[in-house]
Length: 134
Image (cartoon, rainbow, N blue to C red; front, side, top):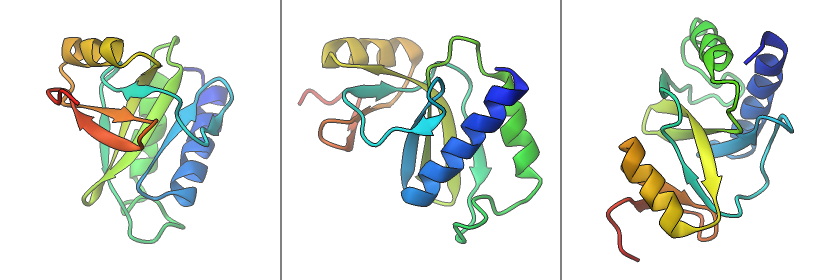
């Protein structure tokens, strides 16, 4: 991803996390957080990034130096990345390139192929285990 796009996506992720500190999904093309997900979000399209989260949402990261790692990760995203997901996992934020599918069977198949443990169900707004049959 070029530097200009990286900066815009970074801003969108920060905006999304300020709106909902538990997580957000950003459209790379629109450069803004999605208000909702019509489908199933599957990560694993690129290496994930984990950074220590601050409890102060005006700061996002606990360590200021993590901004460099974050911008570098965004810059390194593959050109065809369409969405970036960010969510809180205890004391860390996890960032991942995600793909969104409307068909649950396709989403779960892709998740298994990518070695993912879970899929985010945007319809029900919850995380589903890849091995869940519901």
